[in-house]
Length: 218
Image (cartoon, rainbow, N blue to C red):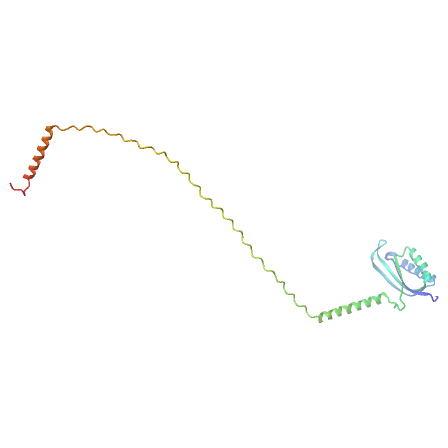
């Protein structure tokens, strides 16, 4: 190993249905590839079968393997080319690690994640308990309901003036018919005999009345 060797982290995914023997064989071939390029594996972490974020070559699950290694930068091209040509490797990722990078296994990461999650949950509960209770929201003031509009009164029908009764046509004034003039028949003058008899009867009556009157004494 020369002084130019740099630390890297390699993760590669194999098909989950490859079988135990074939999986071990592929992991061994990757190790031999690294050592053939004068690289050195300082740590390996077998994650095992995990669900893929999306399908890769019709596979929904993959077998994850992580190697921490040191290799010369000039040998990276050959390592990358060989991994890319391997048909059994679904995906791989090679990253340069920082100078003070601390290597941790998947189980250590899971424990730390669970611890951090529990601490965050406890802190949230404590904060919630200390937080002042929110004041109840004031009830929204309902706008006054509009008064119902009065129904429009029907417009009074115009009073029609009474139709003038037709005046009867005046009857033509007929001139009064002249009364027939009665012709007075000439009175017959009483005969002298009749007049004298009447006078006698009248005298006779007066005498009788005088005789019959008790107040008169003869």
